[in-house]
Amino acid sequence: MRPSIVIALFAGVLASPVLAQDGPPRPPRGGMMMIMRADANGDGVVTRVEALAEAGARFDRLDANRDGKLDAAELRAGPGRGRDAPPPPRDAD
Image 1 (spheres, rainbow, N blue to C red):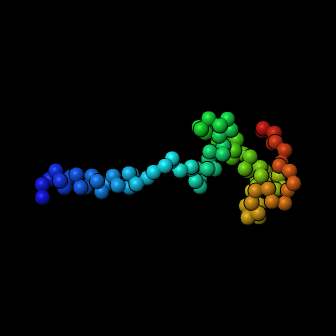
Image 2: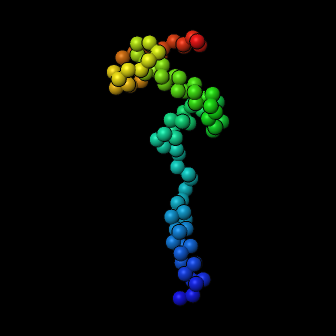
């Protein structure tokens, strides 16, 4: 078998999964969705400020007794369980 034919066949095998994809790209899933939720201004980019703001909001949702700490019971309960309203903003120390 000629080397050029072997190379062409090998390249075809490698390219077949890429060529098999059709349609628009899939939306992000899993952790990527959580990160993109932090995109406060909707520009498709998450800045450090946006990511930290989202992390702070999630911490506040989990901190049921608002003591500034997360214990095992709060982590098991999950965000917002047992509370009617989101917590008030915390003062910066």
